Picture 1 (tube, rainbow, N blue to C red):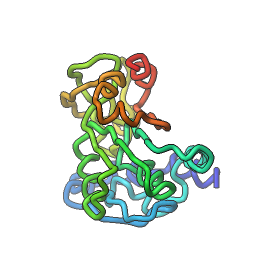
Picture 2 (tube, rainbow, N blue to C red):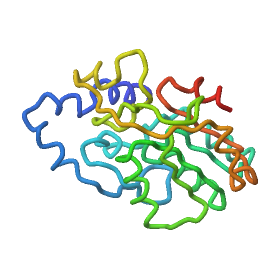
Picture 3 (cartoon, rainbow, N blue to C red):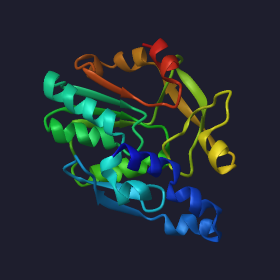
Picture 4 (cartoon, rainbow, N blue to C red):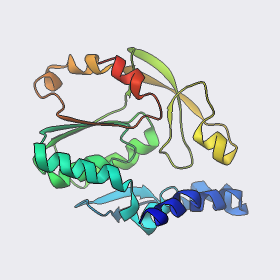
Length: 215
């Protein structure tokens, strides 16, 4: 399993396709579609090319982390899960599969990822799911967010190092301005103060300490 995951990461099909002549047709070919994902009881919307490796074999999605979350949910039965850097919501959907009566808050500033989350959610308008467009940081306000147009998974607040897409694909990451909130600001809301998170997953491309300083 670990060997297959290493091969998958090293030879991601987009690394090959990006260099090919068909790359200019990504926007047309990269259609949205719902797929079955191992460990999740609903179809999740993905992009055909962007998430191709996960479509081929989604049993290899961060196997150690998924196993850890399964153990924590089974042992502690957390009522509220915060998914900070939700991407397409895989961990939130997995949490709800394990705990159908649980509550989820997804934080995802990338509008392309939020579109996929909302399409997935449209098939089951669960009132216990909240999707927020904020980047979690140590300050409240606005900041420049660098998007990942290739995988959608490595976007983050501007930092003093080359982005994933710059290092691996040689392209500049498109930027946009996003709202930033601290964890403390989120908790000021009566809705969230009444049910604080019992389990938090945070994957925000190296800005985790910055986010924790705001909480």
